Image 1 (spheres, helix red, strand yellow):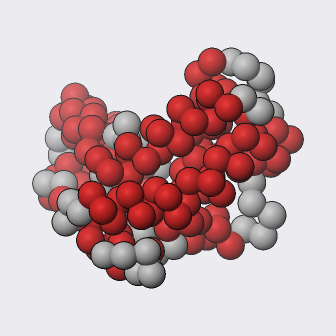
Image 2 (spheres, rainbow, N blue to C red):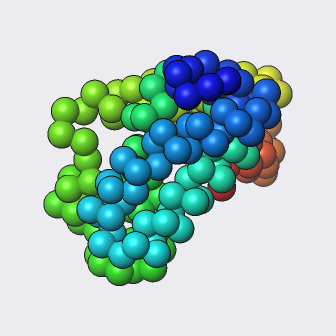
Length: 174
């Protein structure tokens, strides 16, 4: 891979563990993401730390990522990491106005990232055992109560809770 390769070509190579592709993607996207992070957090060390976490996560999840637009994906992931930092550290009380200030103006990036996340969600969902998938689907997609799921599938409420817990472990993102 070289610097003329597209993001998609580099991502495919990255999925196979190519460190050179990772380095190219890092150098290609770092400055723009750093500027965006600085605009949001106003502190260089925090911006650098968040970006390091972002790229480490990209490397660690490289084999399962389904990304169509890497730039949009990275920007949205960075935005979400910064929101989580604010929530975790309680620098500010996040309200709708603050969250809206983190949003992209046109929503195109949001839709692209949403599509990528939906693909990842479906891949993970398909890997779940059938019963676990059914319980999770009824709980999180159809919004059934645990008692309704237990009655529908003729299983105990404790079994429903166990299936939901197991499914959530598969979806857990670090």
